[in-house]
Image 1 (cartoon, one colour):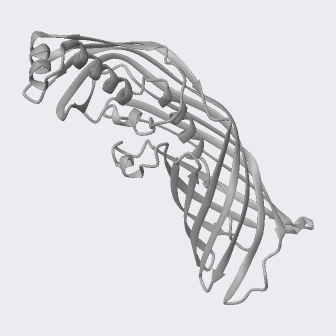
Image 2 (cartoon, helix red, strand yellow; image 1 turned 135 degrees about the horizontal axis):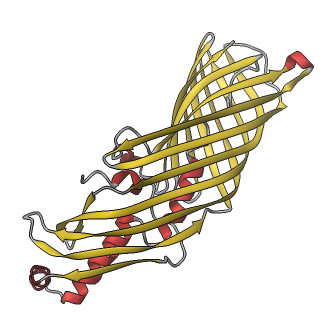
Image 3 (cartoon, helix red, strand yellow; image 1 turned 90 degrees about the horizontal axis):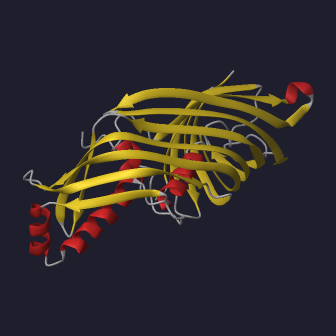
Length: 328
């Protein structure tokens, strides 16, 4: 079960946070005390280092909750809006977006099945048939629940956007400017991750690999309502379009953690070094304002549009999305 906790860990990066109300208690065995002597530190020092590593890895250090909430917000961006297409009457599609609060997207391969990723189906309607061709409205959403390596997870998202063409695109030629677009809306995201089953994780202390096998209750959740305001532009050359822009997110949200866990820590030879107990509840709000840059590329194949989308926040959080849309 060593990958079991990874789903909960992947978005728990480094971010400024508040004091956590979750306690981590470490009690060493004689084997743990002997390891301390081998490392040239006192038993209390080793216990404190185990405490600090587990506090960070499991995400009970308070700072992780804000990072988790911020990444959940970022994971919804780019799923439900077309930033570069020529306005059409109706656009439908599906997209997935993976976010990392630390900017380390390489870590996203740890969850089996991609629970670190958000996904949504979308539809957009340009209002040109009603005499308002500069306006396009979008709706998107998705719900998914699954269990991976003993972690029960569910993702819910729903969004509504409106896009206004500030400056129209230039004439349709081999190379053309796509205009200047202003996009805003509401994005609701809810993540829950938890387990009542046995879990495990590994980490290192002073270069020594350590395993922690825990049983009990673990619940990590994030709820957020974001209002993104984005200004974007792009160019199209033949069948390839590229775009870029800036955005500001106004966010109301928070992350919570609830844990009642206990279990042994051991070395790679299976020697029990001590017992760690994690108990308590904590809550931390998401960042209320977040500036970011956005960019993407889209392949235009007649009515079919395949695209990739990237968000990069000022605090190093990153998301990468891919999707496909069709014009009806």
